[in-house]
Image (cartoon, rainbow, N blue to C red; front, top):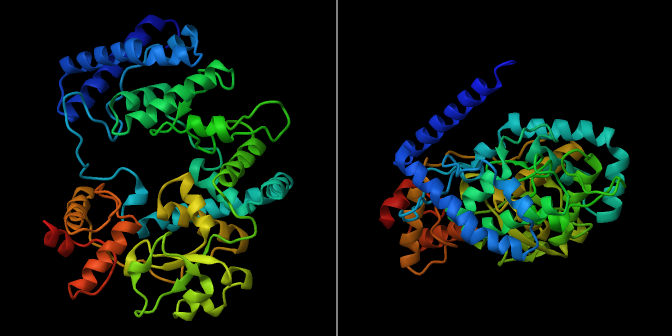
Length: 422
């Protein structure tokens, strides 16, 4: 309140401490251990992180400004508190690892495609220049922009140094976040962004394209000619930086991302994966057909494609190109890449939904899937790691096991399979 800055500040401080204590209780910790964890964090900053930051050219002023008032945020997911062992979480925080069909809710998808079409007109000149320089279709760039930040409208609720610092100190992937934290310090040290502007998602992603700091340093570019790469306020810089990122990871100009297909029972769902590619014409010869009756484009038919079935036999199927896996470099999730590809198609050609329906799948916890994965690993299957996330290696291993054990191959986790693997 005006006129009472000290009292207001005190109340805010007490409120933050209460929230911090509540978070600790939720984690099974006490307010007393809150102070202990914060003490450990401050010691880690001073004795561990600062020497490396200094060696990388970070000034003491930048370092101190970055962490002024910062304490570990124990509400963030995927943390391992001191003295605890890492466990597979019961639930998964990221939506793309839930039931696949949920990711394509029309409310979300429609907002991205409608917003993309409206912005395709208002940014036509910029998009044409981006497409000419990078070879990435405008629909793809727009879909990523819309999905990542609502075309720049999404608020970034976290202090990036709080998030990255917490995760570098306590997360399951400490080394990755330590690298991102040091990159964030470099951004501020070089004057590429102000300390105040370092706001992020809960995962530490920045700006309209939601780049982690290393991605900003490697891929953000100045496209509006003002002398700086500004992914916070500049639409041209944002769109070009997204395209630049995709090109860096191998976007193939002139190729599509993929096609929805029907897969006959004679074609095993266990043939899925980027390491089991064959010419698209060969998939067609096996009976895999593009939905809607159209043939595959001739240039695509001669090129390599890959079977992708994100819900196994319980949902739509696709033949995807290498560009699909480039989209996965943006977010390591099949359904994310599929959302972007499908969204790009709808931005370009109208809101046509998938032909195949998303069937009902068993509601499993992430920890249940991890149990199943460990059981498959014991039998010699490569599931890509027992992380509780049913990626393509897990899905096709399920299909192989089901076929060998006289079950219908669905290539997707279910309760019966979890029980069989316990």
